[in-house]
Length: 334
Image (cartoon, rainbow, N blue to C red; front, side):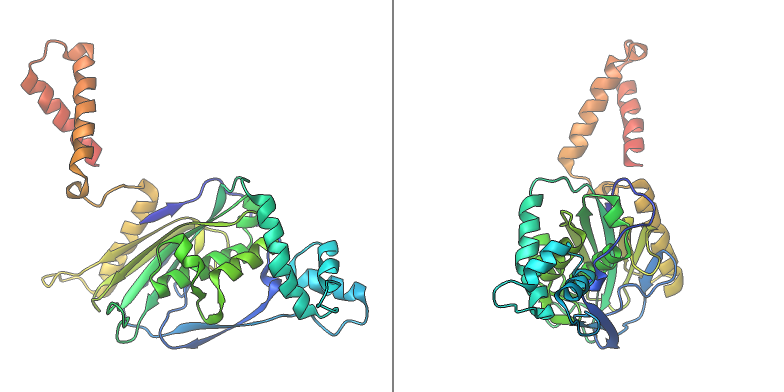
């Protein structure tokens, strides 16, 4: 599977990371979504690690005035000054920074989302993540999974920021761990490492801070029940090197044959090259055998009509035209 994003620009922009401080620790069952050097990503062993995240608001030292509270809330949320003031002075908030943050999440993001309906979101990033399960996933005996998630934004100014790259990578990790490949279903999942927060909450935080129309456009997962299978991913044109998010990405799953003489590392290298080829060539099918019959018939009919209409082929017999069509079909397969 491969996802791509259109135009891109320089690495710039203010993110939403300051919304919360996220501390990461390693425990069991899911791999860090970005453990691989460079642009290639693979895992050939049944690693058992997981990202665990805690969410705590970081508003700095206790403020002594409304002005200071507004400044601190703006730094933490990315919301405009007047909106921060409305949140702090709202009924029931009583200048409590934590309550104000929750008020912004409930009212601010909803207000922004309403304004953004219909606004074009043609930029964005694609994230890749890998997950490994100790003893297999209980529901389906899955041992490994990988995912791609495409998140759109309105401008490349936002999509090239560090905060956006982290968002996309976190969503991909959640999709890999939960096995979710439907955007709407993914919105209801708990974010990896933080069962108290859902993907929707994280997306609302991002919309509130970035103030753009952000959408999960596509999601795809690959999984395997075989311990010897190898999942490999490649992310192209990463904005931030430490996050597995870029303008295009692909992932492949390889099953070694019993007769193979290749080592796991050699198979992984093959998978990496295949993933890179997918990003470069954007193939639709894995092999000719995967092409639906109706697609082949339609393509062959178009070629037959086109070739027969060429003046140079006007006097050629049918069996010669059939050979020409066959030759063109081989190019179609390529």
